Image (tube, rainbow, N blue to C red; front, side, top):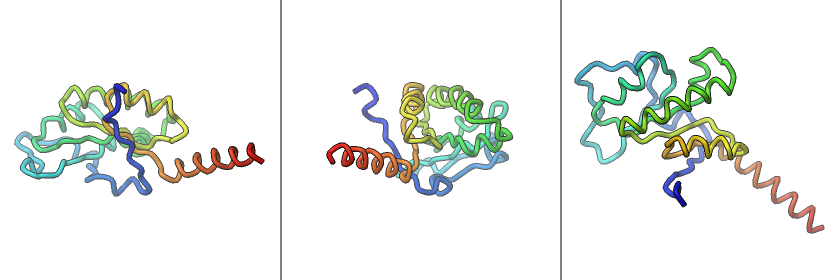
Length: 150
């Protein structure tokens, strides 16, 4: 499978996922560094995008992973709706990959297999989804199979 290395991350509470950057923190000064000698990956959540901020953060030594958080992006955009947020994510994910960083896409519904596949095809290394949503889908599938067996 071409996308066999993509990891689905089950998230109960997304805010605890990564060291989240505020809009002000997304613009970095030259010489900034994020613990480049760490044995762990340094991750930053992309919570807003304007101008060249994503490209700017790609230049920080030690930042290994950028997680594109759809809920936070939507809020920073004035809640324009899912279609506008997904369009921005379609632009940002390939730029992050082209910048040599790992990238995750968050805020996905487990019921939206086509949307998740699209982000993987665009280069997402990992996808975060709601574990409760997966449990709901699994429970509904199980209920239907039992109902059919009766």
